Length: 193
Image 1 (tube, helix red, strand yellow):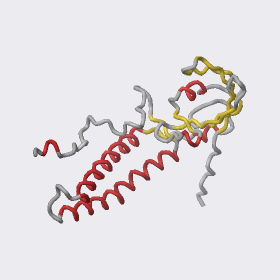
Image 2 (tube, rainbow, N blue to C red; image 1 turned 180 degrees about the vertical axis):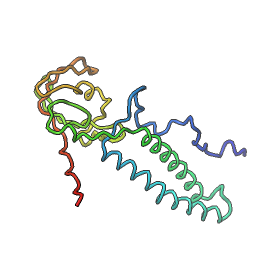
Image 3 (cartoon, one colour; image 1 turned 90 degrees about the vertical axis):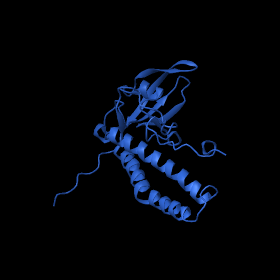
């Protein structure tokens, strides 16, 4: 049988759709991220480079020394895992290079919605919700975080407490009222003594 039918693709070309699950940034926009989000992505990158990748390389090297690679599960899985790790390393490197770290605590005490704000709002039916506006690479909807490019964040950005803004949804235009805006407190300044 020809190797063309048994070999997996490398997936390492520049044109690959790296991490298709992560939305792309809109053209001409910046990759805003909080300092904590940047630190998490950087820690993941360093963990992949310094810990996980060397372990997998070691397993692949050991498996390759065992002989026939075509039916060696450790070798085949290891090579596949290496491609996944390398793809993630390239993705994280590009995102961190393009990242613009923005500290939301500089807006502490303000009542206007900017990047990093936690916003409590009410919809037309009076149902209240709270969201935090985060970077595209760090937002976690399970924790009430939304990307700054999401429709709800775009509707709320630059609004103030008490403002009523229009949110375009698949069901139509909905009015929501900004009830409260908050930001994390600034970190205490380091002592120079």
